[in-house]
Image 1 (cartoon, rainbow, N blue to C red):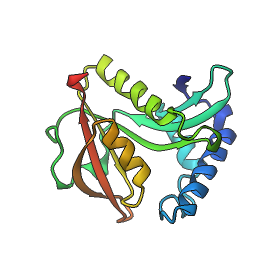
Image 2: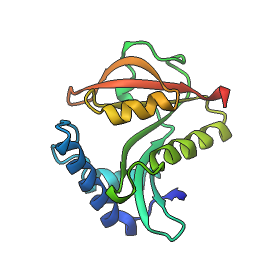
Image 3: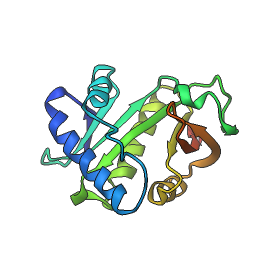
Length: 172
């Protein structure tokens, strides 16, 4: 697999994968991404900010997408609980991760985390934070498997509750 920055030419394929993810969540009765989010404007902003990534097979088939950034996440400023690292510490964050239906359960999500964590370690950033919907048991299971620690609850700008996780990367 390959992991690289997104270009605008990938937008239609990314949106198709996001739509598949929205349907996948809906079938599981998970009320996440069911309100038209993320949409093209959000993904275009990620591309413009250099925070959008795609994952392809060796044959250049686009199979996944994610937003990865080292910018502070405003909704992480307040947490009901406690982050693993200090509040002023630098950290990475993954959002809007989606995998093509044909490539679920094939290690793509784990690959995304590994690539992002590797970038953080190379830049001497010792922590990754992420949040997920409380009903998204698949993501919670993946985070546990990847040794992320449950830290508490954060709230999105629209007030939606999310479970917050963090992993200290200095042990890598």
